[in-house]
Amino acid sequence: MRMEKVNIKWEELGFDAIQTRSMFKATCSIDGKWSGGSLVPYGNIELSPAAGVLNYGQGVFEGTKAFHTSKDNIVLFRIDRNAKRMAWSTKRLCIPEMNPEFFKNAVVATLKDNFDYVPPYGKGSMYIRPIVWGTAPALGVRAVSEYTFMVFLSPVGSYFKAGVRPLNLKVETDYHRAAPRGIGNAKAIGNYSASLYPLTMAKKEGFDEVIYLDANNENQIEELGSANLFIVKDGIVKTPKLSGSILDGVTRNSVCKIASELLKLKVFETDVTINELIKSDEVFCTGTAVVVTPVGKITYNNEVYEINKNQPGPIAAKCKELLSAIQRQEIDDPFGWIKPVIKGS
Image (cartoon, rainbow, N blue to C red; front, side, top):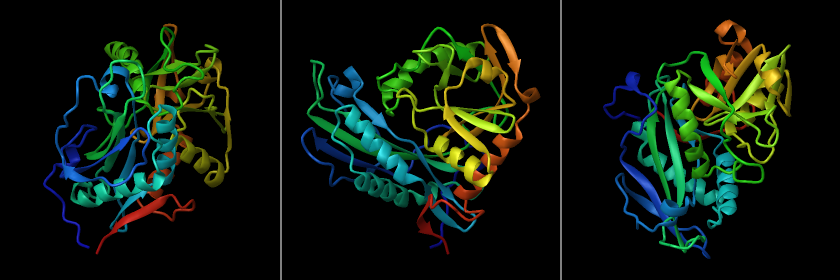
């Protein structure tokens, strides 16, 4: 099909919500199964002031992207993995467990109805936000009786306003992102609200983001508020292991596979100490929003450590190059990660 675009200044895209044509909406009772649902016009929603999500934070979400590729297709990237993680997150927060097929069908339907908002090849991507809230009212602390699932999306550019450059990070020593055996490994909305204050304070000090420490062992690092973290030393790649309080990032998993199977590097999911972090040859972060972004400076206990002379490292650059090439169908997809949704003319 011929894919004409809406009138948007694609070169000026940041990482902000832009209104599109429609969004998907479905509801489910606590003892029911997800089914039905439909596309509705994009717009505001109405909630009771006693809604479970507003009072007790009972909500989870996902983040994935669609791309207009070099082959003139619109594709999704690793949507199966997002669907499985949504199933886990809903179950963990006592929300009716999301059926992966229902999830994927809702995402595809929303994308198809808003295909003309997908940025042209090479000018950004379509960020897709599936989200579930406890929307029935409740005063007591409990799982509420009804839930709403929605999918909305927005064309986006770079996550960081200054564009692609090595990040300036701070190791956070006063606050933790998540507790062991808590919900750090679910994509729960509360995990992100907990990171807002440390992030706000860090940005006032000139940092881009913060690195959180393991709440059990503050000599070990975990992740950023919005991304997973990798280090490289002597050609060996390491990322903190999934200990129960770290999110199992889709991009994290993808970079592990690219580095080990395509670049033939040794990759370890293991404990990573602060000492290893500050002595690394390269540090980079990964996520659906940030993709693969290098780190240039790290401040820990008021000491500033420069990583790779504040320049992007070669392994991070190669991982990003290969990941982006797969997502945009510039090279063959050796892992079966791409799902074509709309084929161009």
